[in-house]
Length: 356
Ligand SMILES: NC(=O)c1ccc[n+]([C@@H]2O[C@H](COP(=O)([O-])OP(=O)(O)OC[C@H]3O[C@@H](n4cnc5c(N)ncnc54)[C@H](O)[C@@H]3O)[C@@H](O)[C@H]2O)c1
Image (cartoon, rainbow, N blue to C red; front, side, top):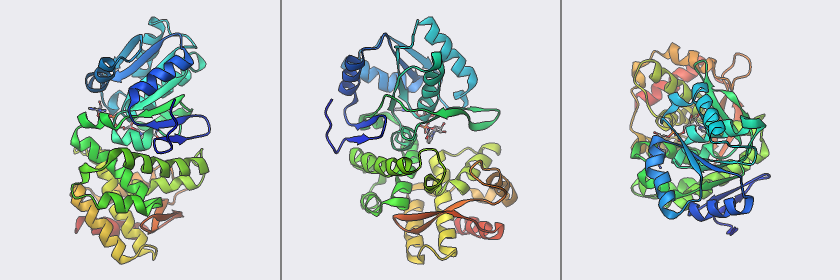
């Protein structure tokens, strides 16, 4: 396996390769010599990604195909996956390849880690969101009892293989949603990412291989500093306290928005709070707001009652006690954790977003 420093990230128990995936997978299969190779995909990634790998000569024995979408990230789907694994006579030396977005990665990793007390798996993320975010950090799981990622575990894959080629079939809206996490990584830790991506005229024309690599490096550093989310890792929550609440209320009122769209709105509101509390300069707040608005436009947050949003924020599982926890930007490329603000200040930040 080649170990080019620009395409490889090393974590304690596994590596992430960015580039042409097929050779990596076939080499890994030859090296590990599993008893069976089984690919897990959804209907979309079967059509657009598995077809590509198959044409290129992927060595695998069987596939398990499930319906696409978050609503299938459930215990019911896991049962089907486990049953299929038994029907296919998978054993503890079989290998599962999770080919898809964050839903396939989280749920496939969860099923592999629990099947016969754990079989090896490879993550092959095919959405930008899963390539820069979900594929790193070891978090696996499913939604349960109406709660996102309520059941799961931390467990590492054998490897993560990222191919920017898969992004070519990804719907533009999904690409833009994942791009919000790239922007976040630049804002919280790495000014050079921000400078690079904002210098591109049309946001979707990014040099993806490089952007994915730089973005993953940010998450890698943070995850290594805090593998089990006890402190520093909270900086990754920037934009997500308000963003998650918006995402969740929009689902409740039947006006769903993509995760990244809600996080973009959350980043504007939380950048406002960072400025309001004396951390971020007014000039940088304006720069961030302008860029995010140009890429994401505006979500109709004015249609949501503020109390409803506040209730969602209060119930966020990342809070400690009753106070709502925020990550603030100090400047573009630097952030700090564990800030609290009053409900009135949160309301002001939502009004700032609505008045744009
Ligand atoms: N484990 C973590 O640390 C972590 C971090 C962030 C998000 N997540 C999870 O990730 C999930 C969201 O991930 P997502 O945004 O990738 O959603 P997703 O997996 O639902 O994929 C989005 C859509 O794109 C389709 N798709 C995927 N790749 C494609 C391709 N190359 N071409 C065409 N269509 C393609 C999928 O079939 C699906 O319809 C959530 O469940 C979230 O909880 C996990």
